[in-house]
Length: 235
Picture 1 (tube, rainbow, N blue to C red):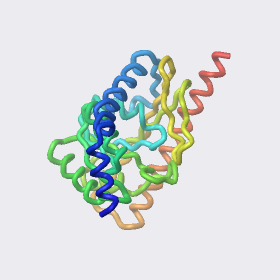
Picture 2: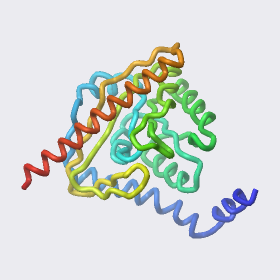
Picture 3: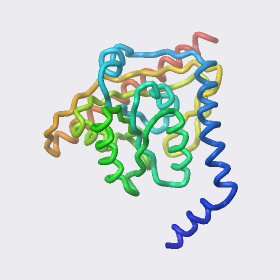
Picture 4: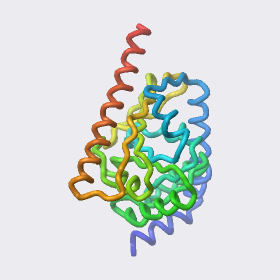
């Protein structure tokens, strides 16, 4: 009760309301600037052509490298899960300004409800879906089972999507999140789409989870190696 009261009081403060108003606008404006001033390189773009441009898909990102992929994928109508924390409110409003719908929850609070709400929205509106597959607490770059559940229930193929950048800020957070800077070269890579059958045993769930994780790590290594090549080429 005390925690809920503090959250209510925080929400009533002028500064909090001001932050909720300004930050989402600054976030979308910043990524628009990055987009306009940066060169984009796509690896494995045939997967986008074969799947993403033709049918709804479940986009799987790593939390630490998801920022620009989320901005890029705004062209695909979709729903994204966002945590219920107070900073999740900032993310929620920023995401919505990019054109997404959202559901609110995480593995620590309201996650199951939000996941099934997401599945219902996908089915009703024929939306794509997006999950940071190692969120909200990590370990970093270890895929959790939620993306498999979404794919099984909706029939959507899982499409890994990762990024890296030549100019970026890398935070000292659990996920080592990167923030691409303007006038950068941003390398993005799609992974091989992974189909999930509607009926899976517990063992098969784990097999699919490992397959998604392995493919995501493979393409993440691809983009990081490409950025190294670009930097060496500029020396």
